[in-house]
Length: 112
Length: 113
Image (tube, rainbow over all chains, first blue to last red):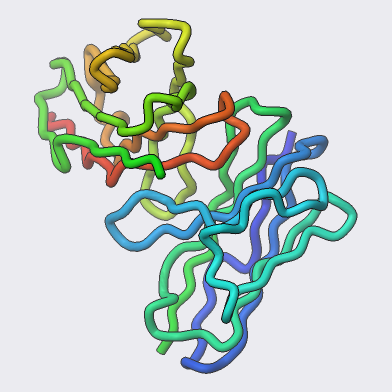
């Protein structure tokens, strides 16, 4: 069975440019999470979806970050405009009804 | 909100010895405590988890203990092997795992040959 798929794996952009990350969760997993991981730190939750509904977006900086999960499967996380401090790894995870979370490989973003 | 502290930040042990990583949490309502292993360039991988109705859980060379009164939990790895070298994260969650996880800052485990 395929794991969580994320793309791109790496992205380099200049500040003030927009960027988007894509996540395909494990088939059948209704809950999807986006986490931010800074270098040398643990992941931090940005947003959690139950099916297509964002049930916890309290940590998402809504002035520049947005996310969507149309049809309750794939999800996209967008940053517009990107800032230098957004350089980090963006991780997507999925789970089935409160069971363990499975993480994708992440997208490493570098903002110049 | 929940706060998870993890110690030590770096742990070096001889191959074959045991390694212990400790975490404390702040929210007594947390009821799910997973441990993840992260290798360079990869996402975190779940290695073991424990729920608040259990005090200890073991899976081959890996064990986790939970003390709800003291709000701390620990990861124990016995007979360490070179492939155990990685960064380990503890985490805590409300809602039995459905909620988002609050992670510690990680422990870089180094297995010396």
